[in-house]
Image (cartoon, rainbow, N blue to C red):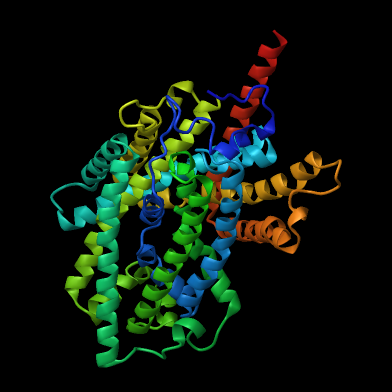
Length: 482
């Protein structure tokens, strides 16, 4: 079992050529996931109809150019996907950005990246569980939302404990259902548009209503990129993917492209059918959250409104399944490297799942989700803090690319005078310098746009992590001195 003591900052990259030091070994994770399985986990976590909840907000912010918002957001997130694809080949291990920052920036930065990603991976599933509970309560009002929320946690946790392949098979069925519902919406919208025409110009979702505003689009992009949070969970399964790092990198990029296309198509059609102008919607913020459902109800019918609602309710629970699985792998990896209690580094012999790490993640999300479900403002409070952890981890991911290919690369190649990145010419400079710098700029812009509550909670979580790191280093120094 690898530890961090005495191995240096590049320890996470050990065994890269073999695809992870413990993969497939007794007590280690098993390589059973196919390319389809990886894609299922990524798309489940994102959710094919992720724009539904924020469509109205983006339409109002962008002055009607909502489809351009998602096209720009897809390009912006491609920088993050590219950095993941680079680093998964360097450190093809469970733990994702924790392993990458540890390889590219050192042990301390790796811990901070893992600590911040933990906030994301533990709380995003809690939000998804809560959303599922609220939606199911709307369908069955006699049952309180917290009961539905707790039930969703229990069911998906049992699937994750059964093993990564079992969860992937069930997840594929749920994802197929979500895509079918999306296809029904697309076909219904096209039929309505052909029969009755659009509510506004056909180019309006691309050019805006009353003129294009770059500032308005960029402001909306800062919100839209949050729809993509979750595709990075694919990287957490690097030690369980047959085909190794190349398959994981391909799945990451494919997931982003597929999600971007789905988001652009559904928002384009919804924007054409929407009965209210972007200006009117901006003047009525209370109606922005339900804008997509209002559009579907008025243009197609209540039946599609209800179908989309049910799909979102079920899909949210299984988005949480994918998030919980990723959280379990992160806790497993950090425990294996002695950054968290070692008990969570154990793998179940029968299922091949990191059972204790999964149960730890499930317990935290259960407490957070049920606690929020019992509060009237629970969803708003929980939603406001989940994104800062992911964005900080993304920032450290981009810094890891720079660290591995330039800073650490130059140290390792002093005798030749060449860095790892420089050897590949202009394409390498693009992948290893320009793209991560652009990605870092996007992350900073989004964090600046985040709510004060999110910034405060993220800051407190970061400081807590730094205290834990200091205590760990102090303990190791005393042990070494003894």
